[in-house]
Length: 224
Image: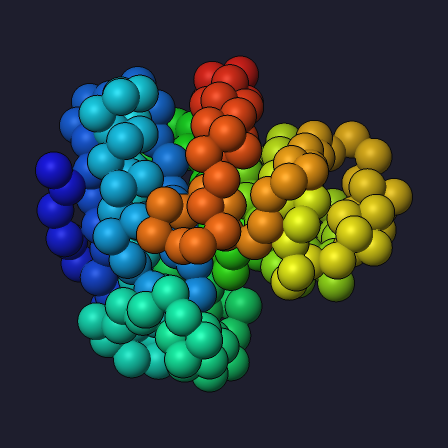
C-alpha cells in the first residue's frame, strides 16, 4: 500500500523512508522502527494507520546511518546485529532523521505531527519529545532506555506503554519513569512481554496490542 521514498536530513544525510497514506489526510505521524530495521511489521503499522485511520505516515530507515537496506530477523542474531548498528548512530543523528520526516509532513500542510516508536524507536520517540519541538504528541511502546533519560522534560504530551513481563525493561525502570514524570500517561500490560505489539515476534499479545493501539489512537486524536 505504501511506497519507499528518499529524504534528506539537515546534515545532508540521505536516507530511505516508507510513506503511506494521502498527503491530504487530516492527521500525520512519524513511525519509528524497532532494533530490527524498517521491517514488514513497521510498514504494516504505517499501512494500518493510513487505511484504517486516515493518517499520512512516514517511517525512516534509521539504520541507513550505519548500513543501508538492513532488515534483521527476529532472533538473537538479528538483535545482536541490530545492537551493533545502533551503537554506531548518535542520538542527534536519530533526531535529525525523524525531524526530516516531520518536516516532510509539514510541507504537505500538516501543522501538527505525532511520533510513535517501538522498542528502540520508543526511546527515539521519547527523546524526540524532550530534545526537539517538532512533535505535537509522542507515543512509545516498550521503549528501552527511557529510564536513563526520564528526567528530561517533554515539550509535548507523551504516552508510554510497557509489558509487565518484559525481560528487557525491568519494573524498576517503569517506576523511575513514573516518579520522574507524574504527568505522563503510562500503561503496563501485566501479561505482555517485550515486543507484544509485533505479530512476527513470539511475544506477540493480541489483547495487549489491541488495547495499546486503542489508547494510542485516542491519544493522537486528542492532540493532533
